[in-house]
Each structure stands twice: as C-alpha cells, then as structure tokens.
Length: 89
Image (cartoon, rainbow, N blue to C red):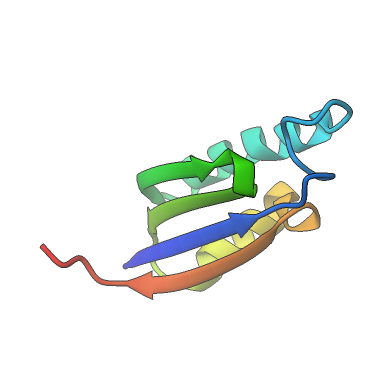
C-alpha cells in the first residue's frame, strides 16, 4: 500500500544546521530500517527552505512507517504525517 509521508522539522532541528549531527545518525538508521522491513521507497523530495520532506513509501500499513520513525529516533526532531494514497496511473 502506498503512503505519502510529510515530515517537517523546525529550523532549530534542521539536519543541515551545525550542531545537529545526531539527526544524521537517525537518518542513517531510518535507511537501514527501511531495508530491513521490506519497505520500498517510491520517491523522495525535499523543500529545504520550508524544512519539509516528502516521501512515497510502499509499506504494508501506516503502523510500519510510524515504527520506522520511532525506532530511528526521527520522531524526536520531526513532525510526521502519514497518509494512504492511490496511484492515478
């Protein structure tokens, strides 16, 4: 099932901000967890000035995606919205 994930962070918790290197560890962990759980990345986009990231993930359900963000530690620095979506193709 496809899910649109919208992840927002504040300028203060931005991974690009000096001193926030710990967020990079969470991002790396997220990549590993995605592979381990068999979640497929359909697409990823970033809007750096707005501090928003968009992902379309193919996962069994939204709970799997929520667990990815929780286990990776990204929930501590981001607000995440997960929405089931359908392909219009």
